[in-house]
Image 1 (cartoon, rainbow, N blue to C red):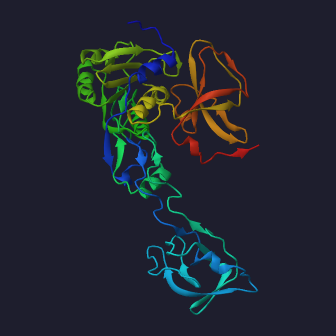
Image 2: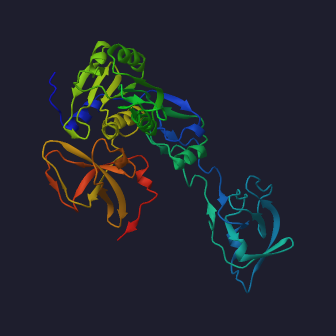
Image 3: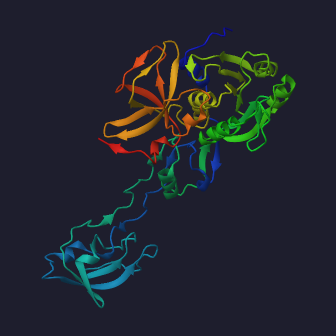
Length: 416
């Protein structure tokens, strides 16, 4: 197989080829946030199940209020009360009313609600000061969802509103696609645990924290996180159990140096190479392979390159396996400064986003080196500058890959 760099679009297509969502499983509703539905959520009954009041006031027959006004109120006899969760035990007959709370069931015989503000109570009598029409301030049964409605389709992402809708249907547990299991291995003699002493030439293992966190934000279940030195036998021994996961991610050791042992270990463990090297900056020395249904990503060791290649390649795969939309984080923004580069590689440019009246504006960071992890700290997206382009002028629209959480930027400003 050729080791010539492949275009990014071809690399992504190879990663996503033939991917199907993992099997469904029942998930407690309280634990379903961020998951994807494995089956349509269908209303088995109307929501709400009964006519109810939109106001505090009194439920009555609209016909009994004909001609009512503040100067000439209509007197009706109060015969009961309907509270939320406690329906009235009586029906409303001619000349009668029932006191009612917001959300409470409309009693039989009533066809309207008059607000507290439009009436006065005097003992067991209510003086109605407005003329009501049938249906006034009533919420009809099934007004939200009718029985048989598909409330959320298979594959829908379960956010806060979806949780509320599923609860209103009485669904608990919820059928969700299983979360893909991910194993992360970092390699390199130079790596030390965060907080450990650093002999000369060593560095903290930042990838061992950033990449697992990215996997969990993408909806994965992190089943293992390990480190291995630059030793062929040790790396192979660490990879063997990691390959039992649906997705294995290795950071570092996939290049062609004398001490890069990951590719050889993967080959001995039966992983078939799909591609090696992408026409991408940063992240060119990226490896991808498969063993059966399992996916294996060999990401560069540079911290920014590892994060960028994860976001652009591994995250879409995890979203697809979890029943979501692989391209869900992709949109467009206007670049705020000129960007020049040689043709030949797609550039993934770290940017801060600003929300303007015309849409997203992407501000590239000045320092774009693959070792400059600080450039990721304030970044909200990657601006994807096409491989063939040599210059993007300020004001041109470019495709962007959003970071998780960038759609609700705490610091986003609205400007004209």
